[in-house]
Image (tube, rainbow, N blue to C red; front, side, top):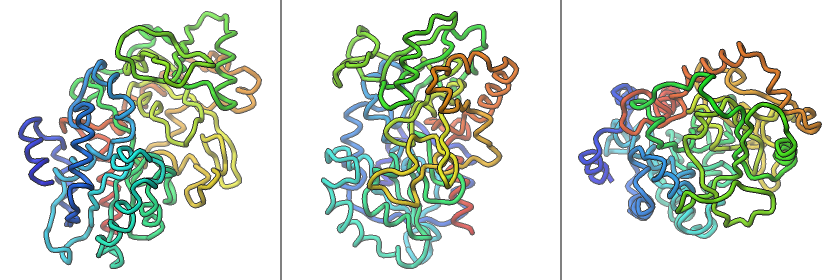
Length: 410
């Protein structure tokens, strides 16, 4: 694994910023010597779908591999960990134990990403037997870049231990914002730090509100129907859910579309929008909200009150998925970024407003000075939601490392 990433670096250059190395060398890490079926084999399979896991890509490349990209941030995270941590080969010297099992990637290729039931032996009994230091109380780090609800059983069990963390998309088991929640992978070259030229001025944005979701569930259906009947002056664009296409032709999604309908999309379209609807779907995690922040646009969400607190998910309880992960409170759903109050970079539309078809009117009445303040704030923090694949600046991985340092050294 060390040699593989060394060869990658020789071809593509470094992937971490100098500050990442300084942080990662504050403690000693032991890499569990798992065989290739846990890391190299699934990684090589993944790379057959494109190279956007190790380098930035243009829109055409991302269109082809979009569905593969969403759940595999663990691949560049593993590479960045390998490039930034200080490794030791004697486990008794280690402060942190890294488990290089690609939880989401392995399960995807087994055809059963949710809970990985098709690869139970590999991802449960066989893996558990190899984690010989887990019972010592030393910190252990697992990688599983999808919603926690879909994590392999062993990873869910590990999170209940005080000495284990799983790098995933949330909701977190931790108190407060998730220290190991990370954003999904966004390798679009235009949003990489070394290429980023800033969010567009208001007068250059031709989309007032973008709706790129599948029209299902009450809040999404209500907004979809409101868009269809809207006759105002703003450009409200409904594109439907993203589905990769091999050509540039196709129609925007409509209710009743078959699941395999080809819907072309532009990964960079969020930058042209002022608002992007990020309404609750299947899980608390949504890739579109991270793409929106990375593009310096404003996510629009619907808050719900659970007895434990506020959530942006549509349910306070998720069938078959127990506490402490649910309810998916706001404080368990987004990455921990010191000093960031998420209410400063998000618009919450009350559920009663959505139900009464008043969402667009609600957005139209937001003062311009408030919009400008939010966009300026998002511009300042956007790098926390992007993986810089050339290591040219601090990024989402840097935030993860800082949170790891606080955990390992406590």
